[in-house]
Image 1 (cartoon, rainbow, N blue to C red):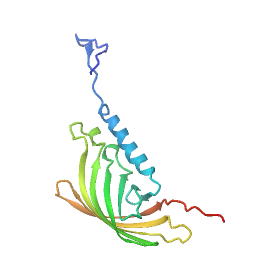
Image 2: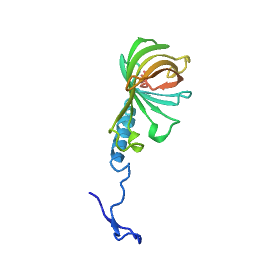
Image 3: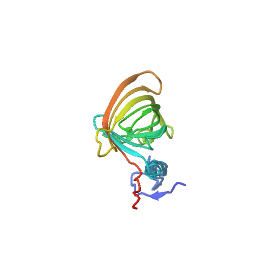
Image 4: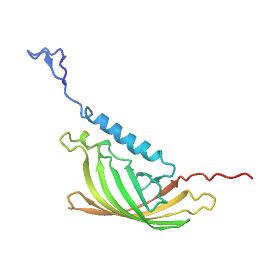
Length: 184
């Protein structure tokens, strides 16, 4: 429902007009729901991982990477606000050891905030598709939750006109359930 507000405009015979709509008007609720679902939905799990790839500018939040199939989301940092994108990546573990984990996956990159730059864009803009092959190594015996991640990531735009081979190197912390010690 549009409101009419009185603006003193002495150069026009009409002093009543409709204020322009903000690009945030319908998007506020969508962004809030998106953040709550991805943020709290995954952090509520007992076993998850959080990582940062500093040279790529990616923040990673994933479900339990020790399971055979897991889900990873990557949030782009160090970018313009309307260019922030999210990678949605289902992953499959090829090898799961105590020290080394090798995985394969693929997914898509979406941009839920692109409507800020272009109000005529679709509600959820797909930027492109990717394939991920990576390894996580837990080098510290005292804390296997600290992991070093190395990943190759071929990426193509949504129209398949161009692509790039990306590599990611970062640190990951995998949360685990604490083992209850039985006192005898």
